[in-house]
Image (tube, rainbow, N blue to C red; front, side, top):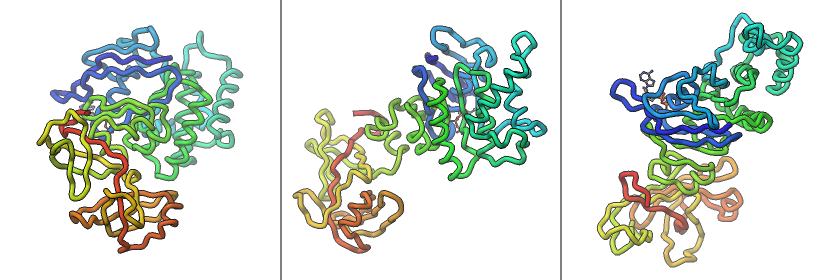
Length: 356
Ligand SMILES: Nc1ncnc2c1ncn2[C@@H]1O[C@H](COP(=O)(O)OP(=O)(O)OP(=O)(O)O)[C@@H](O)[C@H]1O
């Protein structure tokens, strides 16, 4: 089931939480709505769910307009940040609730309900916990029960609002992998809200980056990370070195570094250039004429990549670089070493969020 969102707006008082958003969510995809707090992610998700009414715009599930349909009529599965489980019911009963509560005419038989719940318990890997109560479960397990409960009714769409927001970092990481696998098994169009860039980039097929009630960029994790469409996206997704200045004769000069600006940027224009840390080459010798000398001021040698802070000798500014562990070992870098760097990829924008 594909979801089409067309020109949706929502105001709270005079505050525009969602500002004329249009978005197509393809069938079967796992989509992340990613943005800082207050960017309108939850409001948009709740409008798609039918839990909130838009002031303007329409929502389609495939060809069917659902703008005025209730959440129940839309047949969605919804998972909240805080697992809304019934405390006095076992895990089994919590999951079964959605089918047992149906009117007799549409309610499956007891055996059918049992089979379906057992299937779901296996899917969320909680078979051994069927008779436990929510209080006896960890946060991650409770959230898996909430997910099982949401998919019990075979929803047309699965919507998740910061589903792992209340969990600690380690459990969040585990559940990310788990959600991706679950989505692969279920193949149901799913949208989740998160303010955690790593979570969105790691889990989603498509990332929708929101800012101030509008969409900044839509793309695969790779597209949005490698080709940010605006300064906002550059700064929001991962670490970045920012270089401000004026373009003169087609070049942004910063100390001894020079960045070629796109041809249509006028002379004297204030611009901002961005360089990701992993796009800074480090070498022991100045093997290129445009390399500049830096001093290594900090090394963070954890994980598969190594973060290196350097102090530029040309203008006294700091830059952050990142190299693979092998490269780090090959370079044999030590604090206070003098080495040479060169940005090998960058992007230049005219400030006010205008993409060039
Ligand atoms: N029911 C409401 N009444 C008044 N203001 C609201 C209501 N719901 C949301 N807002 C405001 O709308 C803005 C967008 O909220 P929303 O929850 O959609 O953002 P968000 O991106 O999901 O942020 P967060 O991650 O903090 O939830 C916020 O500034 C919020 O204060």
